[in-house]
Image 1 (tube, rainbow, N blue to C red):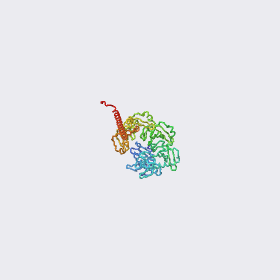
Image 2: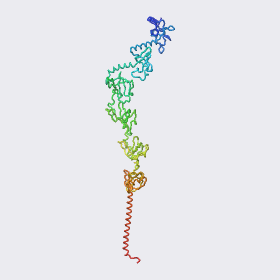
Image 3: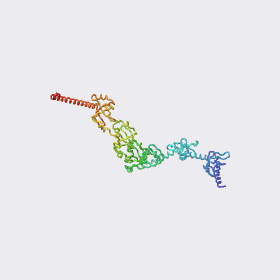
Image 4: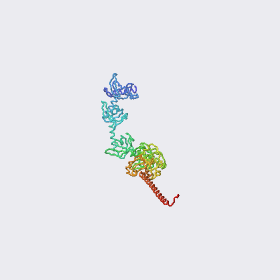
Length: 572
């Protein structure tokens, strides 16, 4: 007999000697492996015949066997004798019974058990303890878990909270173990926690106003304002649940167990020596992080932001809102205008990175220069004409025409049209540019005094009638005013004025010419009076001449009468 056979025989003898009771179905007994075939594993359990276990119950996934002849194994007795006289045994059922016994013991003792999460099931997870158990979703963690599938395949410790072997029902809880562990950690943490200390923590959850950090059984609030010296729109920009970090305990109330934490407090304050790092006049680069109605905030480094006021964005454009020039996230260049370390304020200017066009505007457009541009806008007081990017000149309504009475520039000009004008005035300090269109031509009023001297009589046409008189057209673009009292030589002026209507032809006398205010005063009454005076003077001259001729004639006649007697008749 070989050595292996001797081991088997010795095992059988020992087992047979120890077995003095008859086998019972449904119990677990110990046996010795006798032989292994393709279909069965023969196990001697000390009875009159050997027992058979299906070979697959002892196979690994690769087909190899987990036992060899002579090994002792626990098996479950399914039948004490089948039709062939063999004992039917099961290794798997023996294992299962042993597992159930172990689970029962752990349940009674309150000990944790280890298992592997198999799958997601209704209401929770299925866990493999050797037998399947149920883990409710509410018992997975201290807080609800959003994605239970992420735990599949994990090995964890659980506590059995419900156990029924007969029904095969096992309910587990991981939360109970975590709570117990947390309480132990909490007690330890509370004893060591003090203000000013640096502690390790893990982000548990995030809110709009901050993050709750687990310091070890106790949560502290890391407010969003204490996360960074820089601007943070939402805590999720920096953290996510599960992140580990070091924080400083800013405040600790042992009675309420409230803890305030800070992260930026363990980092250098970037505003210290900011004036030295960013002297006035320095050219800097930064990222636009916020926009307001009055300007844009530019981050130069984490924690240091400067304000570019709308008035400092462009030399020439009238910026109503910074969003018209920059957007959040834009990289911009600026110049430092001022630094206040104590107030954490830094003033920046974007327009200072470029030359101020108003510094050379007078050299580029001397007074009297003819320019051409597009009408960019029409207002009730004038036209804005674009000369170049950001440089507009104003043509006031009074500088549109020498002679026309233009009430609104829109009567003659429209937006987008091209116009020519003359530079009248440049106010560099106030960044104003005045233009004139009428100055392109000679002022006709400079010749008015010569064409309409005082006392000259003119023929004119009534263009409009007012309460105080009438306006008359002297020539194209030139009007004069005849006050009501000057319309007629005699009679009530208001009554007479009402009789005059547009289109009437009048003869009037020029009584006043003002080329500066561009006014001509006329008088029908004065013209009538002048004509009457002229007629009277003519009549007086005629009468005088008539009188002079009569006296002379009389004198001649008298002289002739005196001489007549003295002269003899030539014929006598």
